[in-house]
Length: 211
Image (cartoon, rainbow, N blue to C red; front, side, top):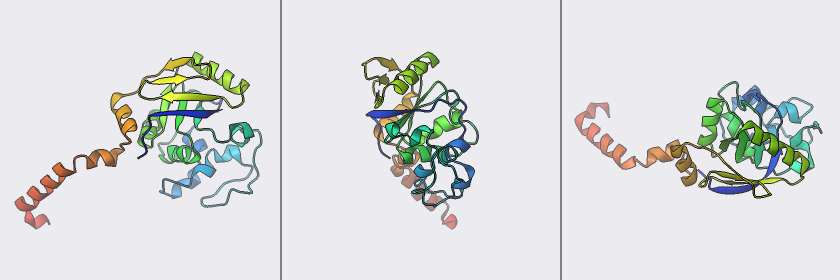
């Protein structure tokens, strides 16, 4: 998978707490197990006036102009600011798939639902937890400044504002190394391919009837 090292991205402020995974990607889109194609349906019920369905063309769907992702100033955003308990609800991995497919690489919030938080790392999205007072300041700056962007340095574990103010964040060492090196669960398993092959060869000799 693609590695995550550093980035600088336009920020979109989603000023809502307890955003659940059904709001991120509604249940009708769970029919597909593909990892791509969900971006146009991210926050579907908040972005559109009608109800989205899998594989539909979103080009001419009626938009809710007040929703931030429909506002010109936030087009192309790759960093999402969120509030408490982001990603709560069901454990669907389609939620990070939709966020990534839309273009978000980093989500910053005071807290995340545990399963969603874990799924982000498995899909090359960096979830960052910052104190609520810092989040209030970032929301205020982002709302007041068109084109507001943040720098993210995973190696240094720092978030840097346009005024060069920096905030440190914690991240599990193992997850950090996986992101820095672009390793998902399959890549980690394949690193042991020689050991796996050795076991299979030995097992075939010991119990040939199983093969």
